[in-house]
Length: 290
Image (tube, rainbow, N blue to C red; front, top):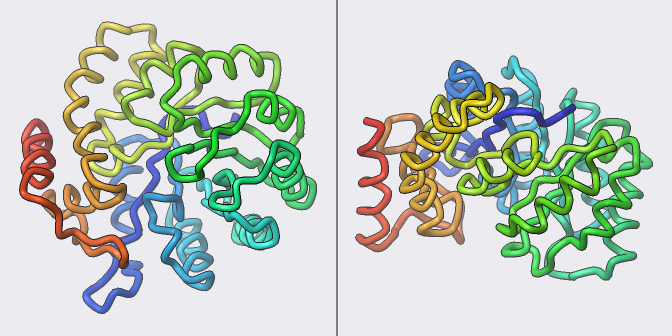
């Protein structure tokens, strides 16, 4: 399976001129890999893909493939099928192990359009592709029937579930249990419930900050030690909450800056000028791990 385990959705660091800082990106990848993650996901929402140029997007994927020792699942989604196809083809050519495709946002296609969008890309590109259901960003919730139908495709290998709906997650785990199809968490707070329901891992924001602890939850579940998994999950809950006290990836970049991993610079319209209440919540959550 493509996405068994912990896959940080890595940030894209920027330098003082607002350009991609590839040295810092190398350090981000090395740090999470040293903690035992199973792969990395560049150019997702956490990687600020929405404000990367196509050239930057492609170069970030290429660089990540070059420096990573684990699997690379490249974010390649778009609300344009043509653009998503171009980025997914590039990911294959760059040597990525798989692609992550957000469900088309803003234009809100019907069920047939959603199916045809993903099928067209999967028919054309021969690397595993992970669907990404995140209603809060796309304006729609990928229907179960569409997901299950797409799961029959040999190159559609799983779904990153960020609906926050454990009933939906449980249904998908049940309905795809006989297929080579992974259901992975896209919400850190849902990782333990999802693994308990039959999911296979997580694509994590918090793993940028606490990769060892995120890996510990997964390994505890794999080893059948649910008491330990619950203990770590409960300890991490303040951090999970803090990572979404402002729009992702604002909090995670602030946290990484406080820990000295990379600076907090973001691309407009996002910025790190957050209310004092948000800053206090992020700092308080980090105090558990200093």
